[in-house]
Length: 175
Image (tube, rainbow, N blue to C red; front, side):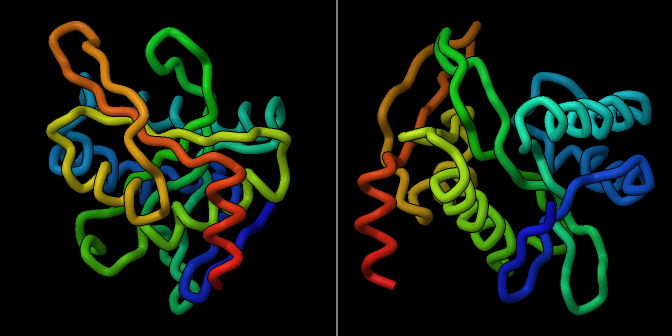
């Protein structure tokens, strides 16, 4: 599967993406809100898990590739996540720090938001993050999501944002 935006290609990851993804996920600034660090094996498992997701669900985290030079700069997509005790569709992303503040995360997440409503029966899609992760909840709001929940996971306050199909349809009418 391949999705396209003006500047990006979102495509299924392969094990050949290891080097680019490892560069991204080993960066502690990119993963500072994760409860663990990424070593080589964890990155390989990340790719394999997403390959399995494509087979099982028809979606997962896709590689985010710049159209201009075919460089993989991150991942973005939809995964099924345990959010406050319930399994829900969630948009997540990681962008190489070298490419922060260029709007790539928003562009990719917007495409994923649109894809899920255009290609699934889900009537709501979520994003969740630690309350200290300002860039992630700012991005969620920028694609039309609103805060719908917060809870404590261990010692961490988690924020939950979501957009419904009806809200998405009203946003799409504007453009």
